[in-house]
Image (cartoon, rainbow, N blue to C red; front, side, top):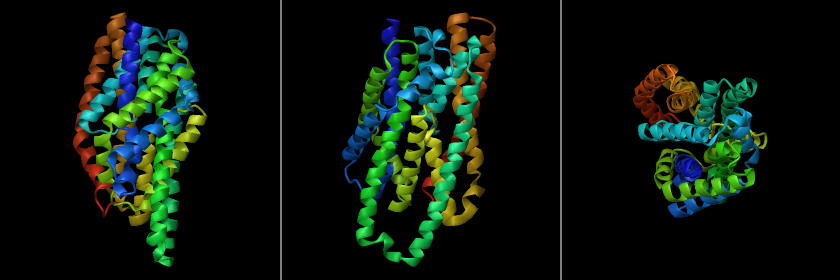
Length: 357
């Protein structure tokens, strides 16, 4: 029964990953009109996610045994990790806060490691440093590309017209598919990694079945995400969309090859800020977007960490530390709620305000 529950929670989490994040990969192409039909965009996204998941074995190994010893991954612990991650993601979706599935999954695993005092600290610190470095790289790259493209448009105004425009539209679809591929390569591990670490499923089978359920989530449940992201990015030109999607895809795929779970949401947002800064200068930074992003990046793993730690103490140990953990959950929840309004305002400024991006 417990094994069945573990698989159900894992695949449910996988579908939520597909619905909340993977489907957004084709948002740029759909919103710009490069893809007219919503179902075609979702099908392309699902296909890209599934194909990418087949190459996500290294990230699965990291999630399964690279952060905490696999010896403590019992069926009950696996259920707790996946439940904590799913609760965090569900709460974020309800509140409209863009959390990274990689961050909340790692946070859930760390919560268990803290509870059992069994944690690979050096590997965790390395992963956390990558979470800081890669968004900076995404910002710097798109900033440089944005500046170059502005100069190119001044010299050759026809670069966004006629044949060039059609070529950019085609390339935009390709980079969107490429981004969906990278999402599958990195994010499927979040759902099946704990199962693999506990020896409940092999790496190969985990990536296949996990990829299928993430793809199903994108296809069946991703319509709203696709629509929202499509509307939000309409202020971007096709070339700018290519720069954003392409940058995110390349960085995530490189990270996946080395087995590093990285936050695609933060990478994409940083790329958007880079394009915006190139177009309008540092006006965008006056909206305190950096502070808000840092808060979200900190809350993502901490929230799931506290939940998983609390569940271990409450369900398996029943000691006095549970009271402290539950109190921490309350504080974290209050902190997230207080961010709801400001994050909504910042997101609107980032994606919808033509003067801001």
